[in-house]
Length: 175
Image (cartoon, rainbow, N blue to C red; front, side):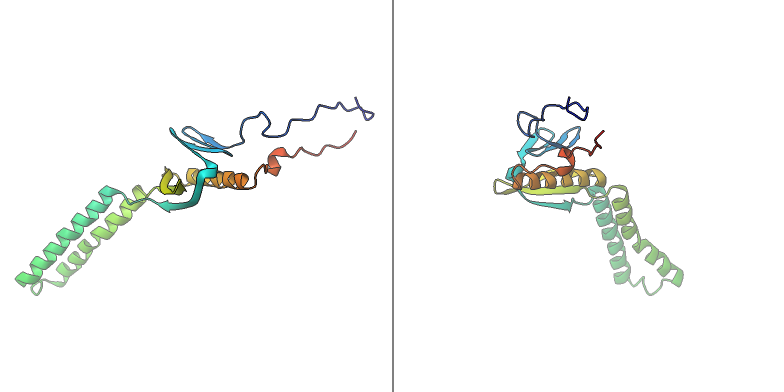
């Protein structure tokens, strides 16, 4: 005991001395530490990852094919009516119906992107080649993983830099 009546504890060992690496993000199948980035069974050293960039993946194949087929059919019908002279004999109501039918591909594209949006993808360069590191449909999860990975890269680039919020001890008044 010291003169103020408080018990003293031995100093804590410095971070990284015989302890586990700092865990920045952990969910089933995804682990980000200061040293490693693991997705499923694939693991990379954070120090080897460069040129990180996030993109959106391709659109849903079913929606893309539906739009392509619809545009082809509508274009074929339009060409057929144009070559047979059927466009001159159509009434104003028929033109309105044709205009509404031409909106079908646009509506299909919007519905396809709404129901099945493109995935968020995190790409990086590993050993000189670009690789897809992580992909997710969930924007929140993707943001958390990419922020944790960028933070891990910052910690690696600064050497033994520690996050001040994790090593700071709360202030306590003397009694």
